[in-house]
Structures are given as C-alpha cells and as structure tokens.
Amino acid sequence: MAKLALQGGPPVGSFTVPSWPRAAENALSNVQAVLESGRWSVAGNWQGGPSAEGRFADRFADFLGAPHCVPTMNGSSALVIALEALGVGAGDEVIVPGLTWVANASTVLAVNATPIMADLDPTTLCMSPAAVEAAVTERTRAIVVVHVYSSVADLDAILAIGERYGIPVVEDCSHAHGASWKGRRVGTWGAVGVFSMQERKLLTAGEGGAVVCRSDDLHDRLFQLRSDGRRPEARPVLGGSELTFDGSVIGANYCMSELCAAVLEAQLADLPEQNRHRAENAAVLDRLLANLPGVTPVAASPFVTERTFYQYTARIDREVFGGVSAATVARALAAETGMPFQPPYDPLYRHPLYRPLTKRRFLIEGLDPGRLTGPAGGLPETERAHREVLTLHHSVLLAPNDAFEALPSAIEKLQREAASLSDIESAGAEFADSR
Ligand SMILES: *Cc1c(COP(=O)(O)O)cnc(C)c1O
Image (cartoon, rainbow, N blue to C red; front, side, top):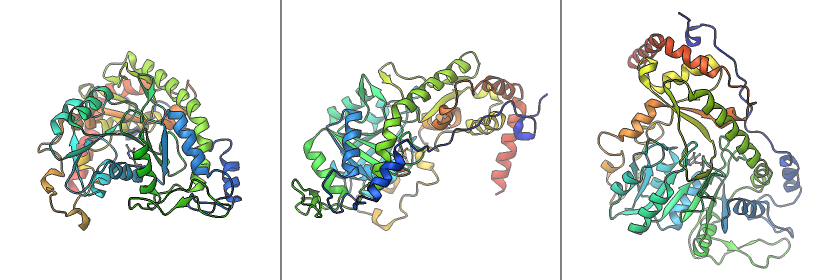
C-alpha cells in the first residue's frame, strides 16, 4: 500500500507549470508606441496612421481568412454584439451548449433572450447536432456553437440544421484560436465567429475579444454596435476622430483599448508556434495514456485539419478509480504529478455563476422562467462528461516534451489505491453535507 499524495504520501513526480500569460517579443515596444502616439482609444484623435485596433483587426482577419474583424473589449461583449447584429432580442430563444463557460448563457440573457441548453456529443464534448435539432422551436433565433476544450463541433451537421430552419449559427471560438475544420479556420463557417482573448485563452492581452464575419452588412452593424453607434470615417483629418456620427443603430462602447490591441498584435505572431508546441505535447500525452486502462484521450474528428488545445481532455472509466468522479481523480492526480488537472465546467443550468432572474430587466414579457434551467432531469451526456472527463490547461502543454513521464505511474498508483480514492470522495461528500 502506498499512501496517496493527497493523504500526505510522497508524490509520484513533480512538474513545473510554465508561466502563462507570457509576453511576446514585441509586446512591450508595441505598447510603448501606443503610449507615445497620442491615441489610446479607437475613438481617440487620428494621428495619421491606422489605429492599433485596426491593425490587429486586419492581422487577425488575415490569420483566420475572414473578410471582416471587429475587435471588442472582451469575448462576452463580442457575443452580445454578435447576437444583436443577428437581430436576437426579447422573446427569442438561443440554443447554447450545456457544457461551456457561463458567458454563453449570460450574454443571451443580456439581449433579453432565453438560453436553451442542448446536450453534448460524447465524442467531442461539443453540442450534439441531434440535441440542437430537438431544441429548435419557432422562437429559435440563433444557435451558438462552442468549439470546447480541444474539439471542433460537428460544423457540417450544425450548419445544415441552421440552414434547414433558417437560423444563423454563431461560432464561439474562445477555446480554438487557429483550429481548422476541413482546411478552413473555425470562426469563418458560421454567420459570425466570436473570440475571447481573456487571460486564460490561447491568445490573450489579459482581456479582449473579436467578432469576425463575411457579410458586409453584418460587419457594418457589428462595427456600430461596439462603438456607440458610430461608423468609420473614410477621410479622417489629423487630430479629428476616425469615427462618424452617421450610424443606423444604437450601440454601446465595447471597444478594445489601443493598449490591448498593441499587445495582441505582438501575441498573435507567437500563436502558431505555441499551438504547434501544445499539439506536440498533446501527442506525447496521447502516447503515454495509450496503453493505460481506464483513461481515454478525447480524439478529434477527422475533419479537424488543425487541432488546438485550450484544454487537453481525457475521459476516465470510473470503475477502475473506485467509482469516484473526475473531480476527485483530478485532485488526486494533480497532487501526484503537480499537473493542475481539473474536472470540466459544471453543467450550465447548475453552474454556480448562472443566476437568471437576478436582474430585473430579464423579467420580460414572453420569458418563461421554466425554460431557463434546462430540461427537467438535466442533460445526461453533459452530466456524464462532468463526472468522467479530466482537463488540463494549455499552459501545461508548453512544458518540455519530456516533462510528462510521471503521468502513467501516477495513474497506475491511483488505480491500485482506488479504495483510498473512494474514502477521500466520501469524506469530501460528508464535509459538503455538513456545511
Ligand atoms: C472565455 C469565454 C467567453 C467569454 O469571454 P470573456 O473574454 O471572458 O468575456 C465566452 N465563451 C467561452 C467559451 C469562453 O471560454
């Protein structure tokens, strides 16, 4: 019998988590240039050249192969203007995944629509096309698909459903900067693609976001929606504004600061190499786990031609871990290896940050509170994924290729000491009950 590291026993290995975020070579000089430029906001005075925000928009659009890009202050505001640009509003329903960050529900509520949560496809952990189709009603005004963790959703099937019912698809690519489906970058398949550049993401300036699209008309609306309803000035004058007042919709100020844009322009240059490094280490992990019983890496669909890893994910067979849940295995594995394993998100309808009906503006006519908390009985595959999936943040994948050797022995140790894992989980459950 070996004592688990969680119980004070010696850990199997140690691991240094590479620091994240990490500044790109030109980040500092780009920021310095903005600080000295006399223009810190896209709404500031034109200094004779493009704004940092405009430059980043062009670079990011090029990187994705998207005709248009509108940067925003964060991914949440990018989602809000995407929904607004598509005309989603009071009384509408928006289909979202059951397993994702809470912003996918809160941004739908923010436009006074109802998030309708769809179950996931157990092979990808992304929204299941069948569940999406089953959730369509005559009130459905948009489908928000999230390419979650290291997967790309079945875009062909979901876009086909959107087309069949005349419902636009929003791709939330906040986990998937640079992933490709059939040779084309994600974010360019749906009516609009949304990105977050928050600190934990693959591309970051601490905060930041972007919406990309093909349609000129959508671009016109997206631009106004994030700049207080202003449009770009075709012939700006030195010291004057590069934004005009002749818009057609009411907007809000969701603009990305010039300082963030300057950082992002530099960070974007490092993204391909970092994504390559992460993919290489994901393959190392796949190999290390290949011959172990009870742990199966989540594989990519063959249509994913470029795979990114926001989080590396693997599914456990709970039987061989004493029947405990992924949360307990993750804690124990983190203690044995030093690698910060975590369970996936809580299902959205019982996520601690999902608090519908706590803002008065959501109490609108036509909103059915009973529809806000997912189907009765929950989403079975989402619940199962929450119990069975281990995730590992991408910063871990930036370690040297030989840093993961302790993982198989740590997993074997947990399986040998499965009885201790059950003890730990029941002690935790008792603790939770007594709170
Ligand atoms: C991070 C994230 C968001 C929200 O982005 P913020 O920049 O934090 O506002 C939205 N969707 C998903 C899937 C995310 O991971």
